[in-house]
Amino acid sequence: MTKTKFASYIDHTLLAPNATVKQISQLCQEALSYGFASVCVNPVYVGLAASKLADTPVKVCTVIGFPLGASTTAVKVFEASNAINNGADEIDMVLDIGAAKDGRFSELGADIAAVVSACKSEGQKLGKDILVKVILETCLLSDTEVITSCQCAIKAGADFVKTSTGFANPKSLDGNSLPNGASEYHVKLMRKTVGDALGVKASGGIRSVRTAITMLEAGASRIGTSSGVALMENWDESARVRANY
Image 1 (tube, rainbow, N blue to C red):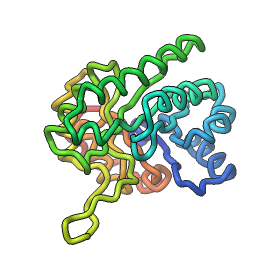
Image 2: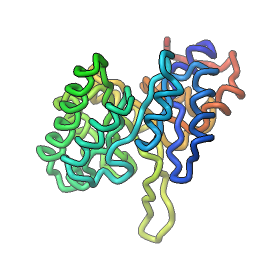
Image 3: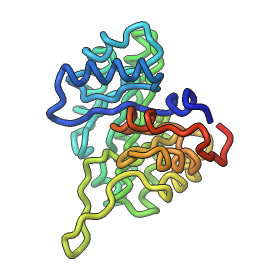
Image 4: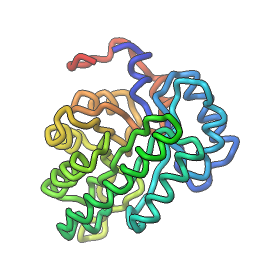
């Protein structure tokens, strides 16, 4: 894999609540310099990012129902539509995690489908093909819940499933923090479930080239990370990649 190809998998991310205009502008410039797939920013910065990246190959991605997934469907639909009209090209929505835990998958699927439909409709009005990614928050779900959520995303017409927000804070029974980001195990499970029907985005805790390549080997087709620049600066052309990309 070349360094340029590696860069094309990365969603260059800054979702911190204290992110500033200066930092978002820098994020956009870095994405252009390195050739990342997109910048991923909070909705309030979509317009700024769109203006900085107009007429470039770098897409503007934003998050919806973030980070809990507990907004009503109507709110998620409005938020997604508003973001698209502000310049977003890609929508990463958090599914209804509580519905997944309850086994209310018809409601979960309807929530995803409503957002997907709104995104595709708004995109069509603007002559754009909007990409929709569904964030599962895998650290909070059982394998069965991950699998069924992926199946709901397929049925709803989503384009990707995504591992994590990076903001969850799961704890063990004794109160110790548990892993909350992407894992090779979950990426493989998600890829096995969706096959070639959907993309798989690995996000959360990806801070090294080794980890990113592990996720790509496991079946990821996009990497969400706030460490994009560090990954590129530490790139090793001799890094071994078993799969053919």
